[in-house]
Image (cartoon, rainbow, N blue to C red; front, side, top):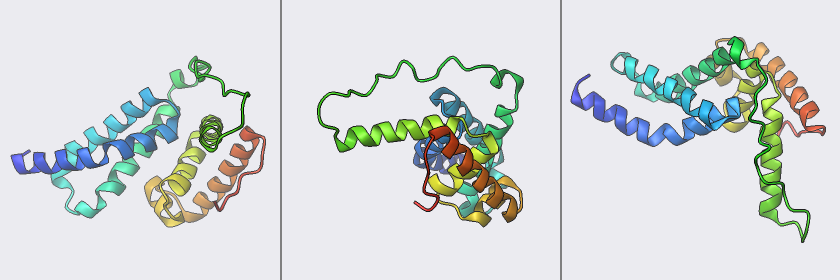
Amino acid sequence: MDPRDEQEFAAYFAAKRDSVRRTAYMLCGDWHRADDLAQTAFVTLHRRWRKIRDREALDAYVRKTLVRAAIDESRRPWRRERQTEDGSDLPEPSASGPPDALGDRVATREDLLAGLRQVPPRQRAVLVLRYFDGLDVSGVAGVLGCSEGNVKSQTARGLAALRKALGTEVDAHG
C-alpha cells in the first residue's frame, strides 16, 4: 500500500475505532471479544483498502464485516461452552439512599446488555443494527445479505427474546 493509502486508512481507523468497538461489544457482550471482532473488521478492511473505490461505503463495509465475524464466531464450538465471565464481579447497585438518575441508567444499561447476551446471535445483530446503529430495514438487509422480510421477522423474534430475557415489555419504537 502506498503512503497516501496508509495515511487515509490510519485516519479512518482513528475516527471509527471506538464506534466499531462499541458496536462489536453490543453484538457479543464481552469487551475482549469486541476488541477481536473490531480488529478482524479493520484487518479485513486494510487488506481490501485499495480495491474499495467508493469511500462513502467504508462504514457499510466495516459494519458488514463486523456483523458477519460476530455471527461466524458464535457458531464455533468453543463459543457454545458455558462462559465463565457473567458479570458477577461487577458491584451490585446499592439499595440504600434515594435512587439517582445516573444509577438507574447504569442499572438499566447493564440489564439491557445482559438481556442482549441471551438473544441468539443473528437476532442480536438485527437489534443492534436497527436500534443501536440506527439502520433502517433495507440497510440491515444489505449488511446481513438477506431479505427485508427476514429482517422484519428477525427483529420481531429478537425483541420477543429480549422481552423474555428481561422479563418485561420492551418498547420496539423507542
